Length: 166
Image (cartoon, rainbow, N blue to C red; front, side, top):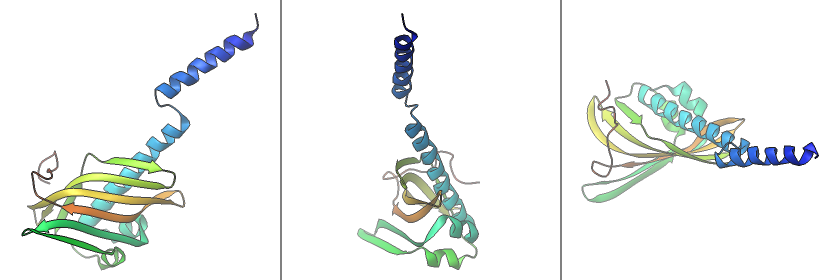
């Protein structure tokens, strides 16, 4: 009996098992890209909360947009602006924004990160919502093309599971 059919059968079984458990090279790369995209979103929130303009300039495209939507006093309000002005402004910040339970979707050089967040101003609860980051892979690194967010209050959103920031 030839070894070739036995070897082919073994190889087929290994490939089938790997695919069944999501171990394909494309799946592994996508998981790595998802982790990297979420890390960029986390870094952006940290940089925003600390006024770290150098990190913001490194992680945000020059043409990026930032904006939000929420309801205040029964009226829907929206804003959309270039992020460039926010990055250049710098200076002290009076808020801490923390994301958690992030999920990412990747398609080639495009990623979206969906991340619930809470925000405290001067140590006092302000609001919560969802941040959505649209990232593009440029020069092998994820960079933000847009950050859009909701501005809500519980029960429409939830606070960070770790409680208030320290």
